[in-house]
Image 1 (cartoon, rainbow, N blue to C red):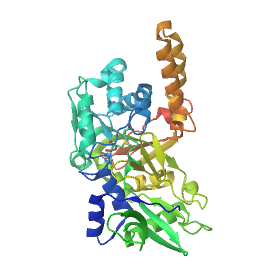
Image 2 (image 1 turned 90 degrees about the vertical axis):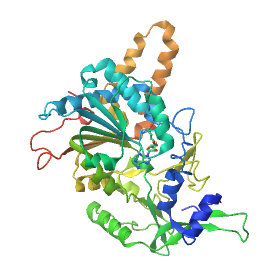
Image 3 (image 1 turned 45 degrees about the vertical axis):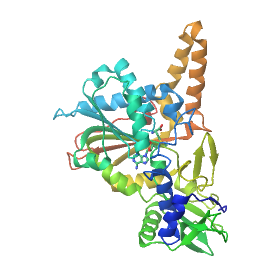
Image 4 (image 1 turned 30 degrees about the vertical axis):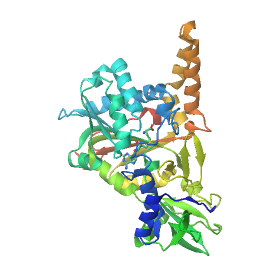
Length: 407
Ligand SMILES: C[S@@+](CC[C@H](N)C(=O)[O-])C[C@H]1O[C@@H](n2cnc3c(N)ncnc32)[C@H](O)[C@@H]1O
């Protein structure tokens, strides 16, 4: 693990000193992203998009939502056929960012699937005020009167019938980090190095003892995935991320849906690559102004901090918390199954005066499936049935993007 340091702002210095001089990395990441006043998301400082800090698939091209709409519409049609209680259909988006995805999905439904729109409620889950304010502005221009915001907790108390989408949100949940030092595993902490004076305060990593909770989490993962953390022959200072918030997230999201499906799209790696000795520094990255660094201490509260997910951990924690895991594929494969090639081909029929538009859309579509970029994202499908004893008793959801031969 490379040593990282950066200047510590006044507000964070006070917090860390009040906490006794050292905090967990998890706490640091939570404050840097979500602190109501200083956090990069909650303050609204981070912006998603080409003119913003980093580009996500919905921000790259509205063709992304148009292709995804094929899957959502198909899932809704299947759910409608088992909607015996005639409940309203609901689409829940968690962590909507700028609101691009839901905006473009609604536009596509209006144009291509009007039968869905008549009975559709949209619920957005966004804990960060700065982001929520921009989502409200963006969606005020769309004429759909059943859009509301609420928390996952509120949804779990009053669940809905439908679909959850979580696009690039689980990678923003604060993670714990563990580090190998002198053959012992430590919880990574964050402390202040005052360099002997009160003016220059720098953030630095610290080594904290593992908590009982972390020890249990690691044991669980090792047992269920048949792996070792740290792996054999891990070098000194080997470090990895542990997604300790995921179990609770799957639990609460499983209570938010009466019957339905969930789509998670995020960067993810197989366990053997994630917890490998050949990956000694984990997967943590920080983004700002289309730049990227592996130093998470750079200007806390201004930069995004993210970490990849582990595919098998996601499968394990989801199924332990009532979800049925249906499968996963890379984004390139998913979008091809949903008609990306046809869409590319159809650009040829745009009139000559729209050549420029066609070229821009073509480039964006290719970016969505580029294996060296957005095409590496993983699409995970899940189902849940809280009305029967278990999913699969009365119905079975088919998923276009998991099918090698989409129906
Ligand atoms: C990386 S952005 C992704 C935005 C959007 N989904 C996209 O792909 O363009 C992460 C979003 O999740 C939100 N977020 C962060 N923590 C969250 C949480 N615990 N629950 C729901 N949303 C969260 C952020 O405020 C932000 O809107």
